[in-house]
Length: 485
Ligand code: NAD
Image (cartoon, rainbow, N blue to C red; front, side, top):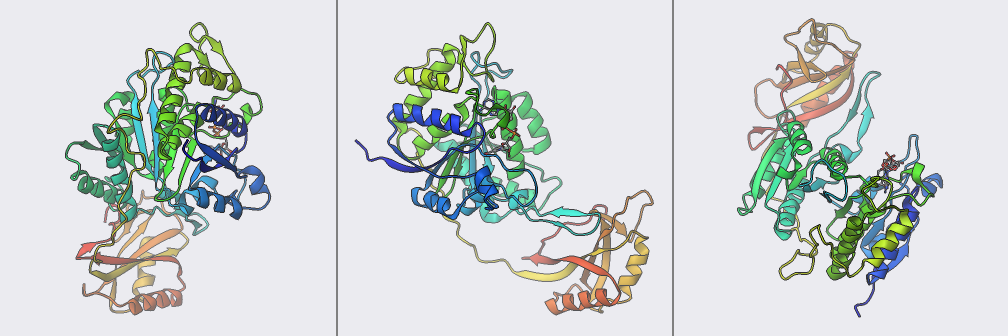
């Protein structure tokens, strides 16, 4: 018999302990060779003063086992608490969040019988970098970070996943008509990497209409790869329209560590009543078994689960009067799955994880190789100032009076809209202004010039709150224009 694989297990909060007990029971009855190392995370740990809800000892256990099976946790309300999920994903470089959503028609009610979509969500970057500031009395900001290595590995992961699991198409969704640099990079990398997978169909949708299409005709989609926030929203939506958020599991994959969890939360109102559906966490457990090289056990569990769903043993969230056989609790559902171990579904398609040439267990993504850096030339600076709304001409005059001769003021914008040299009376103005200074001659600048500009602003009594350098990279502008500039 294979030796047992150590895994870190967290029972979590709310419905977490009930569904984790149910899932571990099923996995062990199915013959999973796992050795759970229980760690404490979540509400209790937050309230002990660990702002990320996890102790250094628990982090060490995850590092040692490299596999983390996690029940949902409750993040206490109020400021100062950081999301445990976001922290875990970033600490362990869990860059890919894989969420398969499938409809189980006619056994679980859904308007979309043909739905079978895998959302591959970038898991570390975008607006989830968690860098937020209040800059002026009226303005708050979050930084959206999108990186070349981040895009490359998630997009390659999506294509490798499609190849390994025999999927025909990968759809990319971004908002690159608006965010031309950040979302634009994601789209560009998708086109470049996609070209290496000629056998896979590729398409790109702008996220708004793409979401509408996905909600309307999900059967036209297969694998969807997208940025962090869009993927977060899309995957809940797709899981819900497949039948219930209680059904879908997710894998958070990194180069050395992987975390497996349900996509839903701790549902505190359902806690302690033996009501919750353990299926989402069970699907995460099935993905974990495939990941740790026990595909035959994964297959046994998955097919027993499909058979149980067909037989009509349903928890309250998927129960239908006159259609389901019995409304069962968490424990009874788990027992029904255990009874079905070794059986196959009769109507739903049985799952195969073991066939010859079947899915690769751990997809390997090549480490990022940093290319030769492009030629970077400083040609200007955006200086942001906190200034009580007045006429933009007044601000322009104050700046022009103090500027070093190497710089010229070319634009002032307010909430991204250019309001100088031209101003529309109708444009609403807040106390946060971007003033764009460019090299007066077009020649590259030294960073001293920026320091001189900041000193000049200070002398003029202007309160600068932030600056962004404007660069050319191999001659291409690395900044966006103001709206209407
Ligand atoms: P939730 O997913 O916990 O619950 C949303 C709804 O879905 C509720 O009506 C609930 O009854 C139902 N539901 C969820 N899981 C179910 C299951 N397994 N069986 C049956 N019904 C189920 O979302 P929420 O109410 O927004 O969040 C509650 C708490 O969970 C919050 O503290 C939140 O921070 C946390 N949360 C944790 C995670 C995680 O740990 N991965 C993810 C999301 C939310």
